[in-house]
Length: 318
Image 1: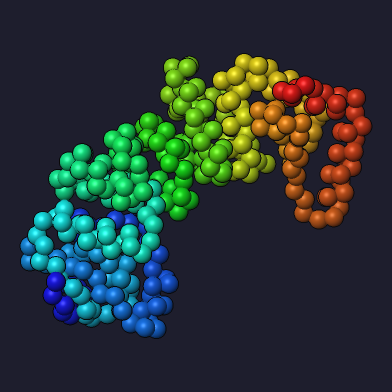
Image 2: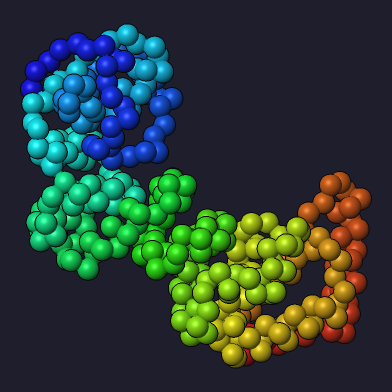
């Protein structure tokens, strides 16, 4: 490699063939470069008349933000795209762990540069901390084809691989519909929700879009008193009930008791997930002390009503 200085505007940043991550934050790096300068020069390689970035996208973008005229760089003379891309992969993996989305992008590009599946499984899956089995390659390649906005979100949330593997079985519009319900949940509940929708769609021969268009689902999504998390948890419960007839009967009985209590809007009563525990959660908001006391008074009247005990008759361990 040759070390030199180069006019930053000569770098072709539209050619992103070697880029691994598209979801980068530059703020910390910009402050570092302001303080200490560009300590680690990026690696470039000529493709045609202009150099492209092999490794160091964040560094180049940060220097552009700082209006640098020129920067120090290493010029690689490697003309084989796969061999050049390996430089980027090895440099990045030596200093940080790749997210699932970045691993998917690496595998997609390695395959696009001509590596065969057997070589990818044997050489590159272990490098990325993925078991060297062919069955793992296809899901990662499918994740690499996710919509950009979806990839950005799952990269920032470090979403569970099993969830993404199931999401790959849905169409792009269905993934977009599922996203608002998936993101507020923890990993275990994300997995449970996506698995339930996937199995329910196969059992009922309905698309995920049809399931999410059901009237009961619409009531949840349109309920303004529910937070995104509560909507997601309600959807988990509702769809699991549809998949499980016994649970569905408990859910209907619970809802019937709730309606009979005439609870005002702003108070949300929710049983434990799938009635597995004898716990019922209560959620309400208030603007001031008077409103708080008013809610407490209403809750006292509800607790004193004859039908209140009916809420506790539908748990699975009774």
